[in-house]
Image (cartoon, rainbow, N blue to C red):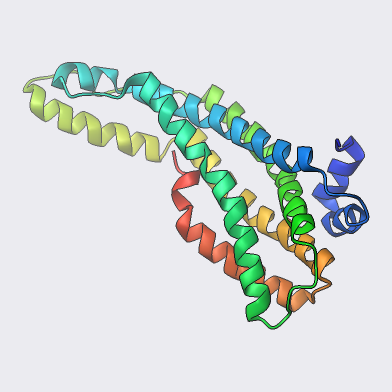
Amino acid sequence: MFLSAKDMLTLLFEPTTFFRTRMARKVSWPLMIGIPAACVVLNFIGTAIFAVKEFRGMAGIFTVSQMPSIGPRGAVGLAAMSSLFYPVVIAGIFVATICLDVLVGAGRSFSLPKLLELYCLAWVSQVPYFLLRVILAVTFVPPQLLPLRLPFQQWVMDALVSYNDALAHNVAILLAKNLGYASYAWLIVVTMCAYYAIARSTVVRSGFIGSVLYILFFVIGQHTFSQ
């Protein structure tokens, strides 16, 4: 029902060996649900901290301009919606793999529940990234607004441009974004190791499917790694 520390290390550094070992065991529904759920929670925490700090840093702009603001609670709500993207990614990768498996002429000869379990287990590889992202969010300091000056309308416009530009070059946000790209690439590699193990596929076929999945979901989910 649970993964030992040895299992997790094997998954991180020898994913093919881990998945071949798991194939001999029964499908574990608690693990299938628990691991993606843990990733969703960790992503929500990191995103919520980033979002709340960003909106609090802009409080002066909303006060001066009297523009409506969603506030910290709204920022937390946006973080929750963003976190729900990850279960969609799991389902999308699962369905896309089956379609591509048929497209390349392999033909399905494996258990779909077992494939789904292995794909969910592959998300253990994302836990270090999500933990690091929470740490980056905690250490993140929003940029300072420009000094208030007249006319207020021009100051609001200049302050928004300056604030967004500073966010785009913030070290914590850039690290979180680039680590997200790298982590997603590693997720696809681990996922294809699961496919390679269960479908007894060739390295070339697994690599082709993995490349298509990476391009597809990188384009669709690129906003997920942005703050």
